[in-house]
Image 1 (cartoon, one colour):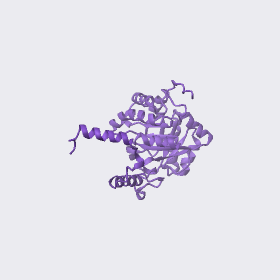
Image 2: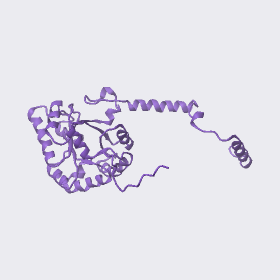
Image 3: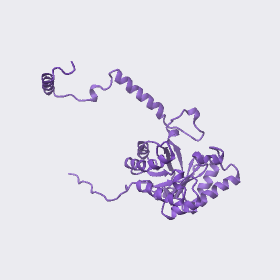
Image 4: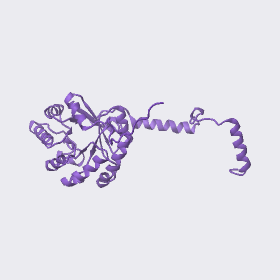
Length: 293
């Protein structure tokens, strides 16, 4: 008889991809894969883990910034239950790091729930310094800042097109590193600027819509799985499977099978012993003769 596994008091899976693992991957020249799941179901993150993806950036569902901020706590717990090993980068809503004290308080709650790091888009150096001094691992963002922050770039636009602008992106990234940021994504820079900045920094730099190899790449799940028509996808995106189209086909086939009496077939169920069935049918008719007649 096989010996039962001994219970463990460890709160973390020993197979978990930690921030230290990501740093070692950069040091060894191994590329890091990252998926942006946005406010997707935890099952998507579990699928990413099963596929071998190293890192997932995620937000929570909610109709307002305040609701998304609150929902991130249970969302993080739910994700971690289904995906115990993948590295989780939790996106913080801007209001949660309006001051450095709020930033540490909120980030610590997300980390306690199972996140490996937090992303504070456009965080100030002063707040970042306070967060890292209080042992908060921040995996941040440079280049074109996503969401409402992109208005500072004239919308979702390319950045670092001139030498002076590229140097500004680098300086921001370098300052973040020196203030304790453990890694960052770089967005909408040229492939050359992307790779030069990644090579100059000690911490992992993951490109998203930035062309170069850097220390790895991120794709948003909606692009990766073809949630939108190919004709409207941005230049940097690549879809590997058309989940939406395949999903519609699967639902349509199921609907047709049910209505055509193809599903369930005999193979999808099991039969009762004939003698027991007769006994049940006779007893049923005897005791409830008028039911549904």
